[in-house]
Image (cartoon, rainbow, N blue to C red; front, side, top):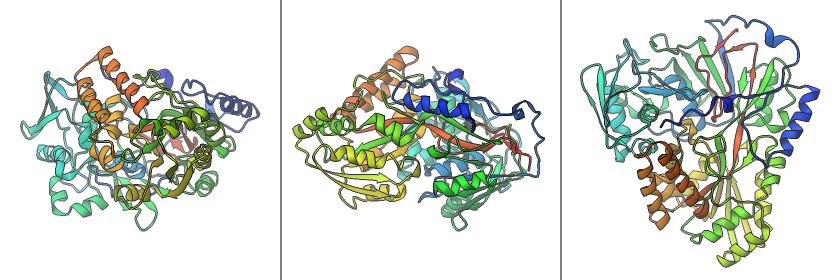
Length: 541
């Protein structure tokens, strides 16, 4: 049973414009922040612009954007990169045999001429599309495809994407146009899941892996010409050799790296850029036509990660979650954009079921649990992402209200993980955002991102080897071999177990707010994922 595409009715996005009636709508949404979220609501646009025929796109135009996330410490190599900016960039320059559309999340044939063809329960074949070449001019071969899968699966490369394709037994070249994918068992999500492996040129990677990491070579509709390392601008040009179904509709793109909220918002309102991500809550209703603001509900979340080697008693971890004032976090901290987690996945997700343990604001219970666990001091470490800047002081105050000592640190995201990964200093609790749904939406993938691979389970949360860890791995492996309701039920059992043990757990799921110029961008669709997508988007300028 494929579950990667949510119900269509859940995909409508809200269009917020600066009207008198909107203010009341936003206030109502704020009041309802702690309740069930039905996805998105809509408000009408002032004036008659919506009924006018769209302007013609310019094949010589340039798409401009402001990106809130900074460049990660690793580069753009699709085997290793996981930062929001570089992953979004790779949507435009790289391709897998299949891809998930960033807006619809529907799987489509990308570098493959068609979706994988099932030969039997454990064998699939994919034929490359005609005329496919890399942006450096070299033709795509089945050898490149095999190499791309093998480098991800090679444990020496420590690719985080390997945990998403554990069902793959082998990928081999049947001939010079077709590859054969053999799975270890019958698997229901082959087409969706192989999209995480981007096909790269073997010769270029082997010749200079570092150069490839800095300036990747792919088969996507755009080619990167400036990686932003020195300029803080990521620049793309149309890939004239592209032969796929989703060609670049603009001649070029320029993405400015603008982590500061005010700078990014000013760039939008002054028409310096045509779209921005992570619109600050304060600006949701202040932008006027032709600027639209959309907030799309997705899996993206703020999570709390525990050092399970220190907070070994689940009661201590539970105490932290019971200490949080979710209503204040949602209303004061996140405005209209957050819903407290009642499960590992958000309520719109096809696998959602309210977890057996749901955390609510209960100070007395939190105090009792933290006392039982014998914890009197917590080292709290938070990332400095601007979009939850109003949430951090609330969390800190909530923990201090337990009568314990809270040692607080705030760092850039890359520095937080460098600090944790290198055991640079003491930490007990990390609060940070996450959104593995950029790689896929099925429950197995979302679970494996945090609870499957060694980077998170061992290096970071020090959870690997525990009884719960072992049980979760067995349940994950069992679930992927099931289908239909049995598969859903098994995933929901994992949700329940994690809700009680909480080695890492969401505080809330969020709507992703995007602003865009509805006159100059044609075909633009706000997405529920972290980042911006200009796949099948053109511009009038």
